[in-house]
Image 1 (cartoon, rainbow, N blue to C red):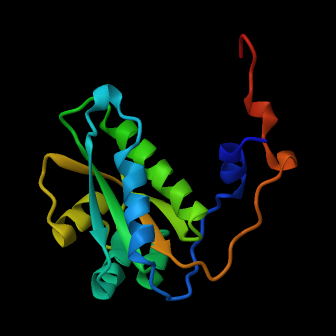
Image 2: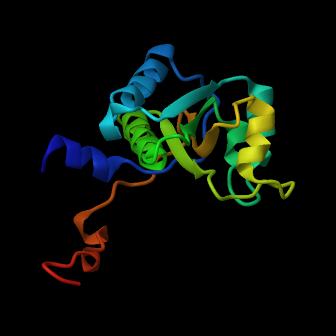
Amino acid sequence: MSEVLKALFQRRSVRQYTGEPIAEERMDQILQAALVSESARNQKAYELIVVRDRERLRQMAGCRAYGGRHLAEADAAIVVVGRTDSDTWVEDCVIAMANMHLTADSLGVGSCFIQGRMRLAQDSRSTDDFLRELLGYPEQLQLEGILCLGMPASHPAAYTETDLPYEKIHVERY
């Protein structure tokens, strides 16, 4: 099995954190993973907002009607917003998010992808409007998601080959 595939099997969403701070060098590497991400026409149609302020993270926990509460206990969050003047902003954002998620796990940092686009906050506004007011990003950017980060209190077991949904694979035709 390749090293990349081993890392993919190991990567799991982590929603419970110890409260221990994430080392700056680890945060830098997680951010670098986004910056080297595949991007359509190399546009890099995303922007990253790093949040480490505890009170702001607690406020952000209200960004989703269901889910997202673990932001209140996180050490950091990376909010990924896209430039809507690009027709591939969603793809660029998601690839950057996936790379950061995988890199975080490889560094021993727990992470969880919190969907933001097309979701509602606890106060019934869109998650995008909720976070735009809190974080101040401009109208030409739209929220894709949030990568919640913290040192893991526990880590779910790695996937095994028997966990894989092979029925999703269709050869030549559906």
